[in-house]
Image (cartoon, rainbow, N blue to C red):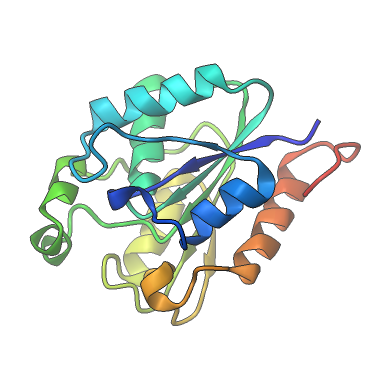
Length: 190
């Protein structure tokens, strides 16, 4: 059985034109909806992610963007993961330890410090060379600490609607490659 995608948005819940929302509809994904999508804390956001994981049957692949990436890594650090989570696509990770990020978005400070421990499942970090919320070097350091593969998206901004990534076909290709690597060969893929 193909894993179900679980969309894990960042601040503001990734609006209707964001690639995460488009993927949710295109792939029939589950979605994490926070009570307060602008004031993250590791405990509250992780609890909601756990609720969605518990309510979604079968194998899962988490798809986080920005502060949603931090949600996933905090959840993994707090819970040790879940046996049904087969991998995570971590796109445009936000650096909550970087002063200009939380000066622009004060809520992000609630997610500091960023966990720098290995994830209990395979992961792929996709980051931009000119993301205003995390340098490419910092994103590579995250990938290394999390035991994840790293892919540069080139100069793609924050990989969101504002940077021209509503529909994101390159991301779908990377998702397909990740699913191929993380699932048995007899599984039907997206």
